[in-house]
Picture 1 (cartoon, rainbow, N blue to C red):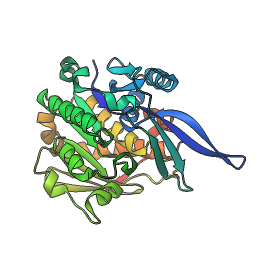
Picture 2 (cartoon, helix red, strand yellow):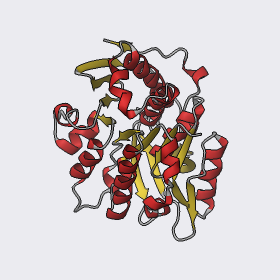
Picture 3 (cartoon, rainbow, N blue to C red):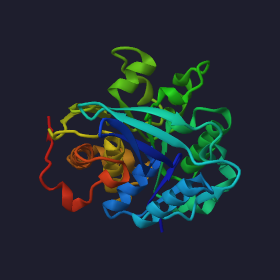
Picture 4 (cartoon, rainbow, N blue to C red):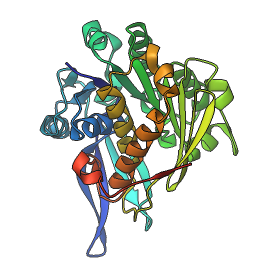
Amino acid sequence: MIDILCFGEALIDMRGEAVSGRRVYIPQPGGAPANVAVGVARLGGRSGFIGQVGEDVFGNDILSALVEYGVDVSLTRQTGKAMTALAFVTLDDDGERSFAFYRTETADMLYKAEMCPDDALKQAGIVHFCSNTLTAPAIRETTFALMRRAREHGCLVSFDVNYRQPLWPAAEVPAPHILKAASMADIVKFSREELEALFGEGADLSDDLLTEKVQLLLVSDGARPLQAYCSGRTLTLQPPRVEAIDTTAAGDAFVAGLLFGLGGQSVKSTAFNDWLAVPGNIEEALAFASRCGAHAAMHFGAFDALPTRNQLQRLVPKIT
């Protein structure tokens, strides 16, 4: 049985490094939802990945890595009709990353909702999504269809915005599509940077989203305090202070930590508000998730940077 399913893109991160005065790119499996699936498995959870890669060397590498890290790939497809997507990742001196994508009509964009059987969604407790499957009409409709089906089966639906502006066509306005997906989820995570890029400086969607289906809204801000809105209250959490060298998978590690905790307690959508109302539940879950994110920021790569529980002992965030 799989507790947590993650839908979306699995791709190769081409991580740039300076070698002898030149920039050299090292291929590493990644993609936000794939990172979350691996993060859950690394922590000891039962996760599966829903998506598609190409029948090429990179697609083979991704599948092998997912299996190696303990992710169920029975819902992961390969196709000979398109190539696996690539993302070129460049880091600045503070470990912050920028991206250049090769993702036009790649294998992940061709996934159809009917490829995912209902039985898989019925058995999962949590299904996780990101916005990178909203960037084109066909994969956007696939995403919305899977979100609707997950809700119909009582799954807890998670949505991490993970906004990547270069993936969106110049004529497309991302905000309405992202807001629609957010309104279909129980858990929504924005970074402060994403929130302001999409909705303007000082944007606050807590009143809008929390009146819909959303039960927990998270706004991260790198090393600065995280804001959490739920059950009529606002929490502020200071993540552990660490020396970041690569933030590529930090947000995904945070989400994996949160979903791992919820999956381990078998929290369902219909009981999520009750769980949030219990003193200490969300505080403990967010503290654990923050340690996961901080650990990932201290290590290079995506899959490789995601922590095990034994690696988190010294990272203790503060909640106010």
